[in-house]
Length: 261
Length: 288
Image (cartoon, rainbow over all chains, first blue to last red; front, top):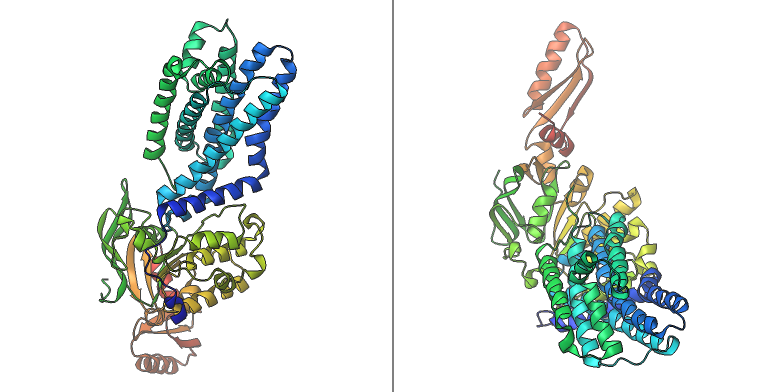
């Protein structure tokens, strides 16, 4: 006991940034050890890219549209889908409640978790852009700043929406159903409206008001046309609005533990 | 029902109430837990034990009353207070893809003066499993990891909520041994359980709760014996089991045996005993 006391230093615990960094490192380690996470985050978008590439082979115009669409989908899957899954899993398993009982500051915990999602998104976009360049013959991104701005806006937006959406999912067993009920229709409708000139007007209005299609538009401008941020401020505004809504409900409704029976 | 309060209390609770809508889970309880004491909260499911403990741990806000944990209000959720307490939840999960050693190293960094990780692994009996991913640990091993995670910060006060539920007898004995070792280190422990033998074995004092109220409080042995009360039991000539409580068993036995001899009867299965904690518990927590 005396020796234990002797180790007690004057510090009041480690700082918030250091603890966030440790949480981030733990999240990274867990991510690489979880084969299904690695698959859904990295392999799936590449499979989409490969499949689309084969179907659209020879049509450079369509291939140019495919890459930003897959990049935007990757942003959504590494943030919205991954966070909704993880938060529900950790909440239902009691991990969040355990963390809540420790002195780990909330901001350090979420700093680490969100930095992990940002890393996955950045890796994902890099892989998609690189694969587009090497395998599908599209050029290097035309506007790096615009790419960074839209990627960041997309990450913040879909992180907020993912955490907020986790509140609606009652148990881990139903997570896949809830997440896919949102993810798949949003992805398919956004891809369809982005790619088709003959999409019905009402559908275009709805999809333009959702966050994924504006993100595809923004990434398309950044990667393919290089038209500049000024031309896509409306798309950025839609993403920002959804982001604000997502972050508000993510914080307001956050639950550290299972709902009591 | 108010317990004596003392200046060296680790936990003090005055008139604590917790309502969920119209339902009153805790209805005005007073408890004082001394530093270095193992205090047991006993009661059937739904008695309000876990709600009480979760208010003390800072998980829930109280509806009324005052609470002090190591001199602080747990509702404020101060980081400095959480650095001084360790919590073993009734059911707390852990990351699937980390090993006990990694989890303990990660947790240790939250505290200003953590215990040595290898020492904690040994204390929890997890040395052999230290490098196994937690998803490959058995239920008993995960429970030991719960203990280890609660201890790695070298807390002054440890909350143990139903720590041995689902354990086999050997695992229970081993968990009890760990609790005794913690008490020997001078830790204060608040234990909730519905196992009477566990309370009897480990707790210096217990409070029996039912329907959100504390019905009795004191050392298990004294509570069981009801201060000076004895129980005299026998079967009468009709074969009925008769039980009588008395403060003076000598006089009662004299009367009973004299009457029986006068009638020419035997008092079958005559016994004199002190009521156990279990007797008191069953009496206090009986429905109706």
